[in-house]
Length: 398
Image (cartoon, rainbow, N blue to C red; front, side, top):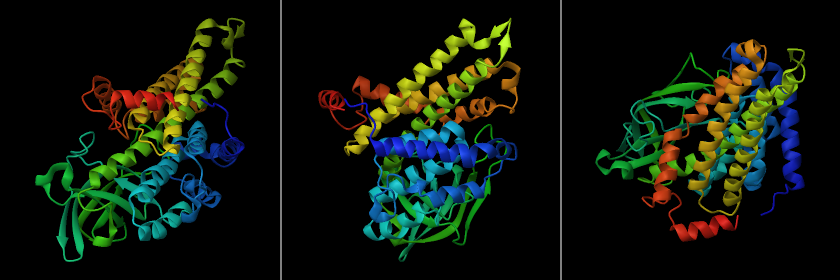
């Protein structure tokens, strides 16, 4: 197992850290206070080409491997979870899904524009009655000539109000269950498509989250992604990528807590000494460091499998579960270390604390991740579609 990063991976991580500290960090507090999606920051991200990280160069991306992409995502979330949401949805849930499932014509048309920010995508899977139960899609798609008419509602959709295009999952035949679900690429300017922002969020206040309403939205058949009836497979493969970026982002949040807490702990004094000299503060910071190192190794293991083109649902679920829990623990302890100041947005740990919670919810709740991991361990359902012996051999070679 090689733990050394390549020069390219080190350089892209450094470049992303410098960008985030220069272009995003100075505005993170004000954007969070105002619940403002900052278009000026988004345009700078677009111009840097960050959105096309793991997309091949032939489709307008940077052609990076998944280790580099994970490191980029970590650095974004180290500063701002809201910015990471834009970054992850555009790349992991939309661009990489079209890359895997799209026709050559779809890839040639959509991917370059997604990579340069001309198009912004959102991922329309969740519904009021279909969150963890993703197969319970109520949005209908009725064939009408060379088109489908989509009607239904989606909710908790990141990028929903700013998106130019949405991946919308709908059922063409409810009697078929998950085998009737189909994915459509929908132009959000189409008549009958409406996005309504969701206000009053606990965290991710500088990101866009919306409900989508489809009132007889006509979508041409050539906009079907992955074929009729394959939508559930499309959705699950997209979530593998989304969960990977959530795990990497969670490690970034933990690292942000460490960076802020270690600095503050050697500035603030109580009882005549720096609070960092108190053993209980040291213990909380030590837990953050241990969780950060372990979480980073877990998402890098998943990245290694992705680089090999090997299915990694199990490994990605483990990373997402552990890293999300670690981020929540780190956010809690960071506020505790800062004491009364941690209760104010004068310091970023208050925002980290609030932003961490969603890491246990979206892209599959922690309970869903535990179900995937537990069923795999018990042999009820193998997450990677393989037997235990082959899986153990695979993991041993990573």
